[in-house]
Image (cartoon, rainbow, N blue to C red; front, side):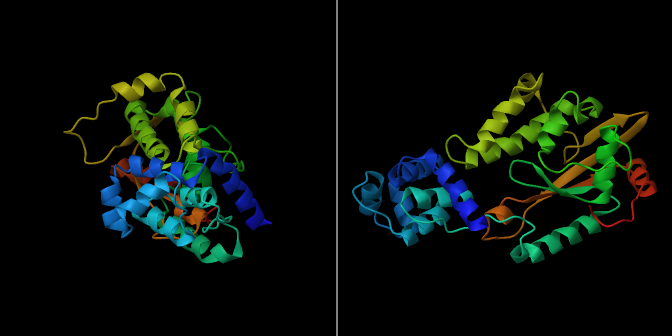
Length: 287
């Protein structure tokens, strides 16, 4: 069933391109490659690439995959190109709970646990919440005025929306304009990496439609003399927290789900922030 659902999803995604020729022209232009450069780096003759782009030649499955690697096309979009060329998807898109991804899930659990007493979370390419460690859950409940024992929702929780909504975390962010510009940069990067009409582009449009976001994204001006990272300055109930984050990915995966995971880890900028998290350390397993 999961394989069938994966194929159906890829078939829905294939609406982005009418055929493989259109897809290849789109990605070559997007990457700024001439036909000559693509020929040089792929080992495929320029004449054949020209024939592929005008529909005079049919690409083999192996050729589609090679071009996807050379053009650094995301795995999800390589599946779309394969479908456009008349082939089945090459890369599975499984749930993290799938037994075949047990080792990945174990590695993520380990990384989240090692980040304690500081927050860490796992999101997908659209910044939908996938996993959190106990300190991250505690911080989210505190920022959202939730009871300490309230279950933290997973389905449908988008971290970017949560952060940038005027009624969400944003009201506690002292430097929300700069944080906003940084977050929009991440989702804009995803939108630029996707094909036409992508979910990332739709999410970007939804975020920029939030009150004050469009203006802020244009006006944000990060001081070059500041810290070598963007701090997240939180103020709530007389408590001041100063954090910065790092983003990590999972090596060179061959699964769409794993390829799109992002691990965001939060670190204290000062001792007062570190002390606040140590005092509230939760010694339970990651949620």
